[in-house]
Image (cartoon, rainbow, N blue to C red):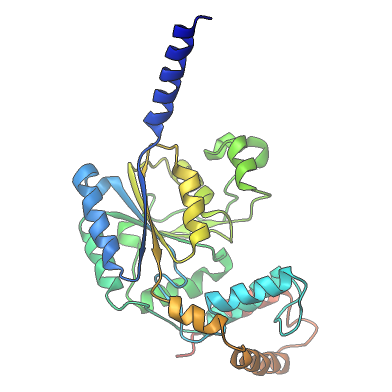
Length: 316
């Protein structure tokens, strides 16, 4: 093969790749109005209906009213369990931690990190931007999640990704034996370290991702719903989720803006630097109450806890 042909081949090859690579931008902010501004910038190029806005919940749309059960508390507990440090942990394994978190979701109220957020979201919805909540929470906690979003005047259903009503039950986001049926590739599965899928659910604009790769989850949801948007804005407080979203869309021909929202950073840092005595004492008190109310041999069985949390109202 001559040198000219090789050069021509390489030019064509890289042009084909470039056609699928669209500029991406990452923003760091503590002001939710930046999302509103960026949405309008993208709408000038693609129209509002060509822009999908994807929101995280914990420490983004909402934050716990106390440290116990907060995102930073969960990370602290998860890290201790992973490292085999079982002092002051609420459970001996990850499923047990999830069960305890479910109780705390059910019992706790949440607040807005920024009071203007609901109005900004509602305004974007009125301008025909499509919105989606993409949370790492599992489907068992949908009721408590919806309750707190609506109590804080955040409503997703009206401008939700079609089909707005979603799907009737939980489902597996992908099948490792037939990965292309979910819009992913075998190379992506390997690169992202995707394992056996866990059940997810989508309903009324809220996707419960069960702790799985958020970029992969959004890809599978868009594939399942037959949706395509030339531009996406993704807002989350954790850098790892922004990284994963960028990895999932870097070659998809989508203009992606990722927003690292840090309004709760001070609260997170305060907790990380604390001695954790308050949350340890609070959990011990609640643990004692649960053991008094429910038989000890059943109190930490995951399915039993899920049944309990579904029927418990929020404590204001």
